[in-house]
Length: 321
Ligand code: SF4
Ligand code: SF4
Image (cartoon, rainbow, N blue to C red; front, side):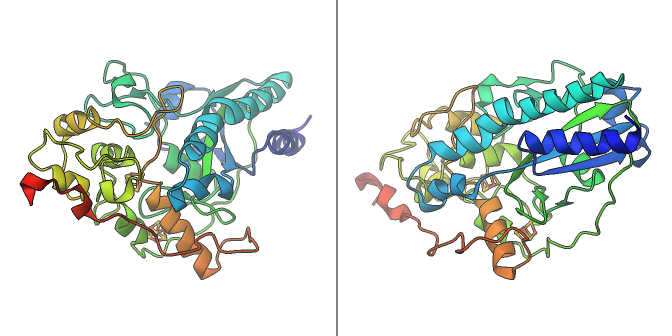
C-alpha cells in the first residue's frame, strides 16, 4: 500500500467505525516543543478523528427534561467506547502496514497542573500535578489537522455539526499527505456562548475558568437545575449568589460547593451529568444554525422555544425574606 492508498484506507476504516471526519497534519505544522514530540518523538503525522454527537442527545438538556442521555451517550459512551474502538481499528490498519500508531484520547482524570480540573468528571477522581506526563493540546492540534476552527470559548467548531462533536487522535510514523487548514469562517465572536453560561465561567476573552465551569456544569445554578432543593446550600452565606450563578469561586470554594451538590446521580467512570446543559455549546449551535452556515441540515430547528429558567426567589427561605 503506498501513502495515498494508506490515507484512503485510514479514512475508510475510520468512517466505517463512525468517525465523521478525518484530518491529517504533518509534524512540520507543530513547534519543536509540542507535547507530541515527547509522547512519540518519531511521529511524522498526526491524525484527527472527529465524531458527531447526535442532536437528539442534546434534547433533554435543552428542554430540562432528561439529563442522563447527554452524559452517558454523548460523553461517556463516546470517550470510553466509540472513539477508542475507531482508534484501535485505524491503529491496527497502520501497524499492519509496518508503521506504528499511538492512539491519543483525553486523559479525563489526569491533569498536569496541581490546581486544574475537568468539569466532565468528579473533581475528587482527578489525579493532579503528580506526573510530568505530557498531554496534547487537543483543540489546537485538531485545528492543525484541518478538521475545524477554534470557537471563541475554545470549542472545536466544524462545518457540518458546529460544536456538537468530540474528537481524538492517532500519532504515527507514517508520512501521509496533510489536510488543508481552512481559514476560520464560523465563529463571528457573537458572544452567545459567554452569555449562555449559567455560571459566568467564560471571561470576555473567551477563557474558561475550569473550576467555575465545574461548579456550574454540576448544577450549582438553581435557576437552571430542575433537581435542586429549595433549601440548597444552607451552610453557605452567599447561597443565593451561588444559586443565581453570580458567585465567583476559587478551587477551595469550588470544592466546598461541589461537596454540597447532590441533586443528580453521576454516570459511570466518574463522569458527572451536565446540569448546565452544555449551554455554551448549545447557544453556539443555535446561533450557527440560525445563520444557516452548518452544512448538516435538519427538517426542523434545534431550539423549539425560549430557554427556560426558574426564579431565584424560589430559593429564598423564610428567615432570608
Ligand atoms: S457562540 Fe458565537 S462567539 Fe461563541 S464560539 Fe459560537 S460563534 Fe463564536
Ligand atoms: S455552559 Fe456549562 S460547560 Fe459551558 S462554560 Fe458554562 S458551566 Fe462550563
